[in-house]
Length: 234
Image 1 (cartoon, rainbow, N blue to C red):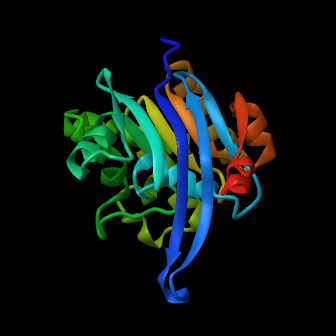
Image 2: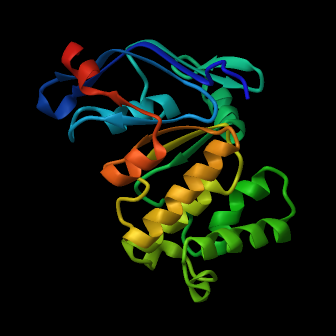
């Protein structure tokens, strides 16, 4: 396991332009800087509205930044997410960056088993093998087998969250971003997610996440980055 960072954020600033408010500008972060290494789990900390989710989306490339660099090591080279063209960013996501958001967004009428298996199929794993691994992961997350053939759009919030987690964790990605992965889960399923995160860390995956559950955060995270320090500078 290398000590070289897989993620390097340096001097990142972001301001939202509010078109419905007469072009008012809303500063989010300024001077954001940190690094993340393989096998490390780091939490973005701070109160609601401090910019945690926004910063996570900047790292994933969903939000463009005003200045600074967000460098991710993929396939041996560093790619600056902030300046990468869309095709390069998609390749980086396919090979290097996984993302577990708070909300499940999937194609309608596709079964839960297919939804979870899809990233593995995209990696070239045989469909039957991918479906088998998807089933094993869903079982670990205590999602009843009777739900696997059904589309997850009608599931409860907690059930959808478990599908989301399974889909985000099934394929190996060296960098994993997680936005409140246990927000809709009960204590038993939160413990399963803690186990899965521990397994990813042991495999050398670097994890950057938002964990509002203090017990989960203290169990899985090696350190906390206080996002309010970046917000103050904005």
